[in-house]
Length: 69
Length: 266
Picture (cartoon, rainbow over the protein chains, first blue to last red):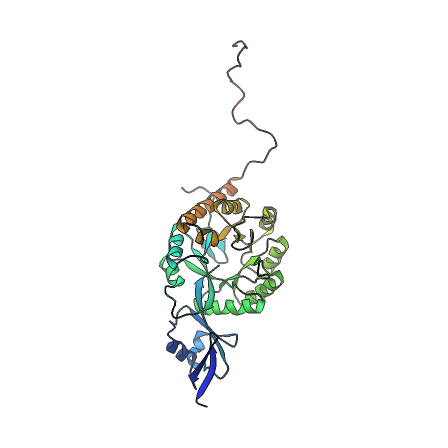
């Protein structure tokens, strides 16, 4: 399979096979500071962004700090 | 002016000159948050964790960093211990802090905490190395349980979030203060400066204020008013207030009064 169907912040996306978290963040234009990533409700620590690939049906959440509380 | 007995607020291994923690929620703009932060001298400010939007302009993180204010992420919007633990871990990775203002809400209309889920989340996060500051009901027993669970502070509510109803049960806050071995930060319910002052007079170690500042007509002015009130309340607490009496106690001396009309001078 050459493409991966996943969800990023709730939106369906199609990615190339082997897309890492780093690749995903770069392609979506997120600054790498002040953000965190979870896949399927587990945090992917930034130390593993370069070697964690998004696979089919993954639910990727990219979060940051906003005014609150 | 410094008075003997002035001391910093110490939470876990950090100390703060300001006893006001700024909540950044509810502001009309990032600029207003920055102005309020500058006006009140807070050293710690809360933020929430939400899905990142690359289109959004202006970052609250940048605004706080510019003013040298540390971030205290919260778990606002979580209804279970499991959700709150995930958000806390996301915040730790995003913001490189182990500090978390732990919120686990149990009711949509009142936004009151769910004490059962809150305690479970606190235990899990303390075990995972977090410095946990739990937003809690004004319940002295829950406060004790949270402290026993290893929380670095307890943050009882004065009244529901954003209600501005002040401190509805001052006696409970006083009981929490009396029993606590960790700092007590009043969180939620402050409507105006006098509420923050009352919290400090009751013996709280600090106050967390969001809506009362961010939703005021002039956030910067209210931020300064509340910071002044926090300092005044702290001083009043340390100074030791006089007892309440049913009748008057004259403050001027009886001796040497000019005699009433009709009495001879002697």
